[in-house]
Length: 340
Ligand SMILES: Nc1ncnc2c1ncn2[C@@H]1O[C@H](COP(=O)(O)OP(=O)(O)O)[C@@H](O)[C@H]1O
Ligand SMILES: [Mg+2]
Image (cartoon, rainbow, N blue to C red; front, side, top):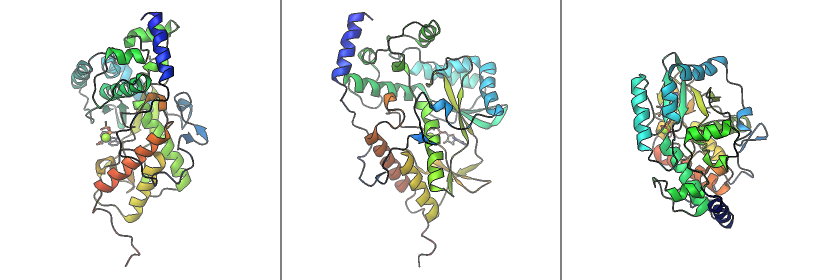
């Protein structure tokens, strides 16, 4: 890209800075999260963002580190296929086909339709979670929309102009890595970053914070870690980290007690969880607890808002989660015990 183009793009960026996206969520009623004076973007009083997040929360135990080591040592081609995002302006379909073929070749069962969620044979207690390219592509489309006003709607392919708008320089992942290794001045290396995988861990931390505040008795989340993928650069983004989560034994919940439902609603509101349908809650066999399984942000999240920097979007997400929850569990919530 010529320097003149870059300057023109920077000027466009500045002039459109106040442009805001219409969230595709239902409008937030005043009730959602209105009891909060602040958005839940801290853990133990520290701000959760793309720089701090790797130093927040408990350290991953040895066996979790081993999952990452095993993945890279035993499945190098799979790692490439899962993280591959060769060209942000390219077609993502071949990437998905390649990943699917490699998963099959390695005998790994993917539990997700649009992401990668799987256990390695030698580590059945842990699930690896990596965002799929379709979701990361949506993140970049939303970013381009914010920066240039390029139209955004779900599933719109990322056009060359969109990529120009976010100064991606059309580098492939490999070229991009090389520029970072060579310490070349990549014009805007943050533009390349998405936080779709990473969001699962940010929500996890926000949940732990809310749990401390509210003393939840019935609702919990699986033990979760953000783990660097050996051999990758160390900047926090979906290209370099994965989430590793304890695999729960249990199954979808049938009915909820009044107390469980009340607590689930509090958790959804407090952390701004947008997805809270029946399938997202499991009853854990050993504890009887209600486990929230899917802490991923909506894929129409702007990487620049990570984490919870856009209050309106946060409230829209919380409202969407509450609506999902109430519709999904309609008729399956028991009356309050003391009600005659
Ligand atoms: N911690 C977990 N323990 C057991 N099963 C899980 C866990 N997390 C996810 N799953 C299973 O994997 C599926 C996909 O995981 P999820 O996080 O919902 O990813 P996605 O949103 O991409 O579908 C879930 O529907 C559930 O069946
Ligand atoms: Mg899910």
